[in-house]
Length: 70
Image (cartoon, rainbow, N blue to C red; front, top):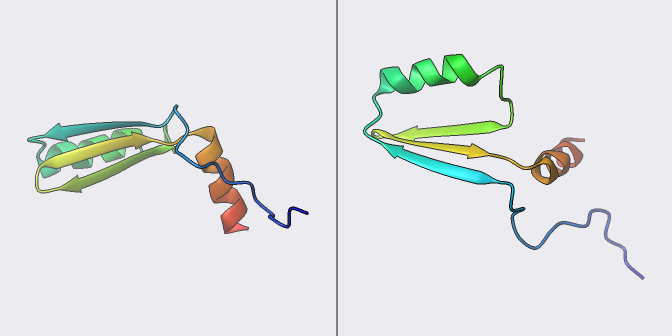
């Protein structure tokens, strides 16, 4: 008998993408956040010492996130 409430995948879905950009200024990062914040809610941006990482999350990721939030 399976007592698991959520069937989580064993690996990240293939439609998650990650892009790493180096040499990005804080002003450029701030402008990108302002530009994309409302238009792409599934876009994750991290910035540290001139390195910007952009990651898109999959539909499965967003679904699991909503389940955990509830």
